Length: 471
Image 1 (cartoon, one colour):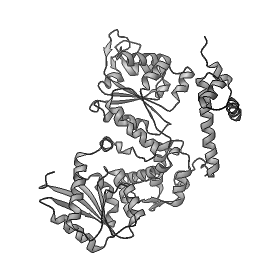
Image 2 (cartoon, one colour):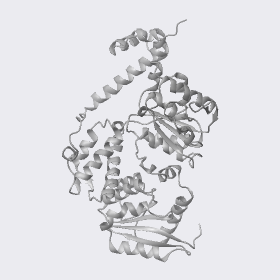
Image 3 (tube, rainbow, N blue to C red):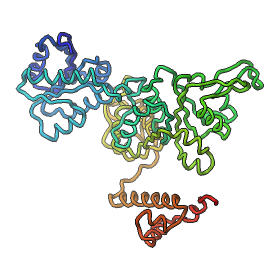
Image 4 (cartoon, rainbow, N blue to C red):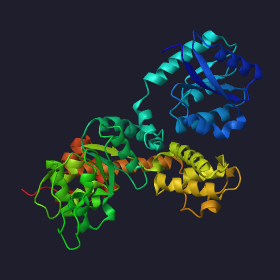
């Protein structure tokens, strides 16, 4: 790093001691071996403009928060905004000696370092230079992903969700087909765009198609196009989506809705990278990556005959599964606050928080429409709320479906165990074609005990025998 250049600091005053704030400003102003910070001071009165300040921050920017002894809530809100709305600015906290619990909480929120008074330039500059080098040279793939085309909406800390997020750069580096599964509204197209815009195909088109929105007889025409006169009404030649996506990515949402004929055509295209427009004998080559998505269990669709098994295996090279929002309890309020800030900025509203009762309602509701439903609920709540706090979702957005009850621990645990046992036993019976003895041996249980589990869960063994191949 060239120490002769100026760098940038956002200096946030969170009810700090005036002497502590002044000492911090003087150290930054004095600089170090030719390096100086241009400093912008933000105060608690500027909290409404903080998200846009963070979002528009230059690459060489550090957020320095000078805090008073009782400003942890404001600091937590600020750090949450930083993590969500900007590219995780390196954050240094200057504050009187905090307790250990407070330090760990702030580290969990992403604080990079602490500086405790009395202040000296020797405490500041090595830390700030290290953070600058990290900021400039080691921006992660996740930050890059969130910079592109609104992809910073990929938000959440749930372990299962984060595990799928970590697969995105791996999927992007290859050119293999990706199959994204998950309920409606979980963000499947957002993930597909992330894979595309992190891949070498990023400069080429990303073309989405909802397979369930078109009649079966029009699907082939939509994908591959037609020549003039190919059918009644085809007065001019038209290129299909495969041609439009040349060199890029074709995203097939609701791929389970494809007819058997369309499945056959798509399978041939995936195998040969060739296609023909309707009415044409000319074979065309294509360089398009396919990313498919569905909200159904495609293995079940294969077993029922609704989906070709060879097409399923072609599409399911790299699987990504997005968990439903009801299984991401820790992310519900994080997402709700993200949408709250987003729509407050969009509509010029001054709504800052959800009431405790509203937060409870958000956490207990089952969210059948997942993130898309949560987004719409918060959007309407922002529009209808007049004061700074959203108190009642029922009156602001209309009645929601019944909340789920909070079960006692032992009942919730029993339900999870029961679901696991049932799924595990059915899986073994399917593998062993309904042979109880072999399934029990695989489970390392006595046959009698295994049979008791079958009876307990009322599993029909005969259905697995009927699935056995006929010799």
